[in-house]
Image: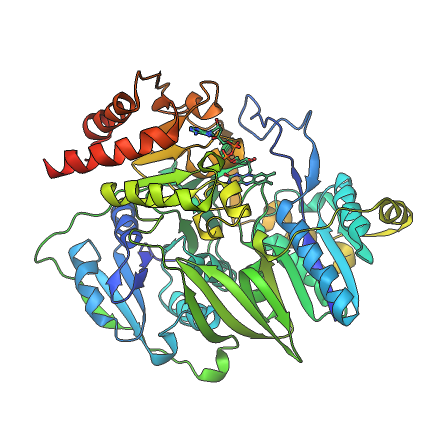
Length: 262
Length: 329
Ligand SMILES: Cc1cc2nc3c(=O)[nH]c(=O)nc-3n(C[C@H](O)[C@H](O)[C@H](O)COP(=O)(O)OP(=O)(O)OC[C@H]3O[C@@H](n4cnc5c(N)ncnc54)[C@H](O)[C@@H]3O)c2cc1C
């Protein structure tokens, strides 16, 4: 089973994220770039599949030069190959374009299954996985919390409102994974050493047979116009009541008079 | 491209979900600004009756795709029907509820419609002639505004409870049209096997006006019963921070935050929750926040509209009691 995992490098949101004064983006200084949290779960799932049925795990990433580090993290976890598409022509790409470019890479490989994270924690978009499935012309299941492989099909569980659905999906397919699917492993020291020596394949837009006008700003159907800090919340009141009854009374008063829910 | 705004209706068990009415309200405003119509889109089997409430709440037209193969949601079924209808009628904008289904099909439909897509939408406005969508980013530390700049039909996947529901106008009705459905079973590649329902929901997290959420401070699964009682008294839904999920006290479906759900109720009551940024990412869009925490320095107090310092095990039962009394009298 050859599994392709699409990964993204994102800012670590444990650290402060600041908007540039002109609202054109976020301050990149001091940002710690990491492998997207959900993608770690996708890599883990791919590794488990390989351990069970054999095959290979290829990690594909689209991003700046520094994104090689995210690919290397996945290699250190145990992925076999890493590919990075980096090209200034990609600047300003929207999610659909990203999916389109990824579909070109996947299409050039021998593959049975593509795994993506449910979303990336920078923009939270949750678009690329399903759009990639559409470009590849295959079936999909998003936000899956369980994956079982059979001959030519997979049984997956996906979380829906108030429950979980079990689906049978024909392969090849694209799945995006929920965090509950597994517990990702940490890269081991030998794994890290091995990953350091591995060559990451670098591709440009031209290598994928795409015209620069088909990607980036010229192809984008959405464009960021502004970033701003979230609206400041009105500072509230913190009370230390004399008794639990008093504390409860304050809350009831608030729910009744201010929030008007009782 | 036309000027119509489509609203894909979310329905379950024969009735429309609240988010449908929220989208209709915003759709009316946007369609009026462009001189277009509001069009309700109903997909399912034997769902035609739902055209009535759609009309009463502002839809000028309702397109009904009624087919046995649409009875349960499938990616391929919904994508086919929606994408064909869009190709034929070319609406300006399609508003999709941010549900498990909506998030699943919307990107594929966007690819086929050659339009732009923005998800987690919290506001939609026309600025200098451009349609601009705002959405939270980076664990809600940033608000991003994206303009739809392409030619095709635009897709906005909208979070629950960010727009107010359209008022119901007795006697108002929509022009109801059947949407021809040209589907055969072979086109639906994914086979639905079963649904495992969670027992919990009186009120769903997405629809609740009040959410009562428990954190690690609750110490164990048995104490969530205390929150259930408070929620019952308030007509609220119960959520949680991540530790109760990771410890197996409650299912993942309860989790609110970066790796859980986003909720924006009228009131969010955080019980024994410290207020980590990843948790705030899911709930700081709430209108009012009430926090109960024994640590006066808990970060949650910095964003709470009302913070009460004290032991939750003592306060919550009293609170439930007083809420019941207040409601009774
Ligand atoms: C990548 C990533 C994603 C994450 N995603 C999420 C997410 O989606 N949602 C989420 O919630 N977290 C998430 N987290 C975890 C988050 O960082 C915090 O660890 C978590 O939110 C803390 O939960 P808590 O407030 O319940 O627990 P704690 O931080 O342990 O707080 C417990 C609180 O209870 C109070 N308390 C204890 N006993 C009592 C009592 N008797 N009476 C009153 N108060 C009491 C304490 O004072 C304390 O403030 C994520 C973390 C990472 C790394």
